[in-house]
Image (cartoon, rainbow over all chains, first blue to last red; front, top):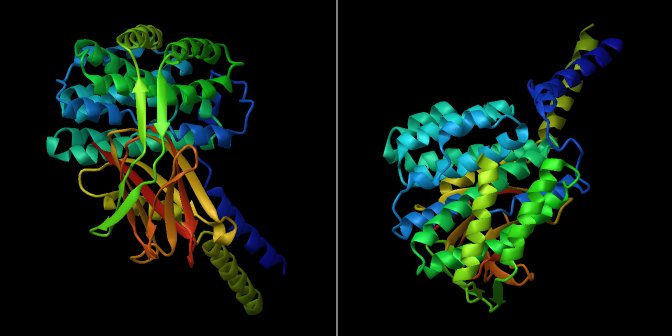
Amino acid sequence: MRLVAIGFMALLITACGSSKKPDEKAFLESLDSAKTGPTIDEEVISSILQQIPSPLEISVLLKESGTKYNPAILNTSESLSKYNSNYKKALNLGVYGTDLGYTNIYEQNQDGLKYLTSIKSLADGLNIGQFFDIETIGRLATNSKNLDSLLLITTQNFNSINHYLQTQSRANLSVLLLIGGWVEAMQITCQVAAKDPKNKELQEKIGEQKIILEQIVLLLSFYKDDANMASLLKDMEELKGAFDKINITYTYKESTMEIVDGVAVIKDNSTTTINITDQDVEAIRNLTNSIRNKIIS
Amino acid sequence: MKKVLSILTIISLISVSTIDLNGQCNPDNFANACIPKLASGFNFLKSYKVDGEGGAKDKVEYSYVFTKGTRYMINLCANGAATDGIVVTLFDSGRNKVATSKINGQFISAIAYPCNATGIYYIQYTFDGSAGKCGGSALGFKR
């Protein structure tokens, strides 16, 4: 019977032992930001984080509206050496993620490869480099016919990083990564809007970010015991002040549906109206630029 | 000794099959399988696990900010070709129903949603006569 017990234990040990990640210890030891945990259940934080839309949506909008590719509005991939703390690394991993998405959408593969190298370096610095498949992405980036696969694998890699950080109870880094990505997407949109002030769709796109900023401010408020996070929260609250002047009116009207080729195609009859002035856009652009400069400096 | 080995083998098999039974729902596999099934032209955004935990959960819910002017697609994958009774329903921030994949009693495996109103939306998965209560889903977008 003792043999049976030993055999059973051995089986359990084998079954359980394989799930431990080898780099987990190094990862946890490497953290230097927000050592004080959040004051709220991390599941709540994860559920808010997953709401934040992908910056890729903005890049697609810009390209499809005819806006020309402009690398000057991106953060240079050579700024990497400036990002020494994990706080800065996580924020700029998000920034570079948005920049990579922008270069990918515009099929600027040479620029994309530079961002890819910087992203890999930052991810390695945060001990999450194993989720970034640089070889596959690099190979896909050499041929513009691979755009769909390139976008897919890049998105999957960032999703895996976020998921991993949240399951490791280090959602603070995931929050920073998403904020960095959002601020960069905002900055790109604001710069493009400044050159095309009559583009009402872009103005509305800026205005509707009010909904996302409210979630970002909420997320940061959970970490206000950390000095870096508190400082970022202060900046975001100031930006929120500018957004508070924007009025978003939502009108619900029941939608209709029909089945087309096995897909339920919805006709959305609800609407949102976004009231935003040129002055609002300018105030938001100035504040966004200031926050973004702090992040990338 | 033979008896001991036989018992050990039986216990091992029971243990392994329990692990299999516990791990029977592998929503990650279904979620990953759903990604290439997004219609052409849609860019992948998120994959969602739909695990009813053997009946312990009657719904699984996620949320996402959908934006005006963007077309979204949400699809479903489960055991077999059909959706195995898994229904996806979309609610706006005021919990008004915007879309569902069960239309006139028919289970549809994908929803195409051209968003006309920016806001937080709830993507809710329920089990309507589902045998496995296990599946996955993917969200994509295009302009």
